[in-house]
Amino acid sequence: MKRRDYLMLSLLALFIVVASLFIGAENGPLEGADGIAMEYLSSSNKNLEPWFESIWAPPSGEIESALFALQTAIGGIIIGYYIGKKRNAPADNSICSPK
Image (cartoon, rainbow, N blue to C red):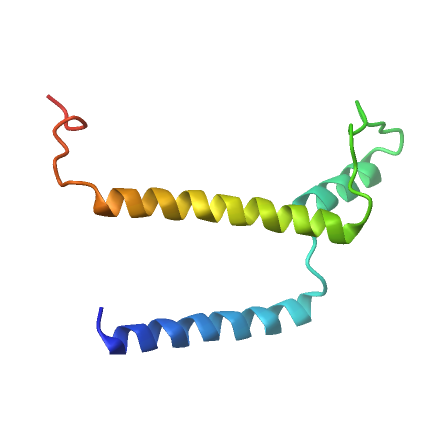
C-alpha cells in the first residue's frame, strides 16, 4: 500500500469514529441485544419466569465489561492469527481444490 492509501484509511477510520459518536449521542446510551430482548419479553408477558439462573454473575458492571473486552480481544487475536497464517501460507491450494 502506498502512503496515500494509509492516509485515506486513517481519515476514513477517524470519520467513522466521529460519526458514531454523534449518532450514539442522538440515540442515547448503547444497549445490548440481551437487555432489549429481556425488556420486550417482560413487557409482553408479565408472568414470564426464567428457566434457570446463571451459575455465576460478575460482581460489578466494570468486571462484566472487562470480561467482555477480554473476550473481544481474544477473538481479535484468533482472527488476526488466522489471517496472518493464510496470508503467509504457500500458494499451493491443491488439497482444497475440487477434483
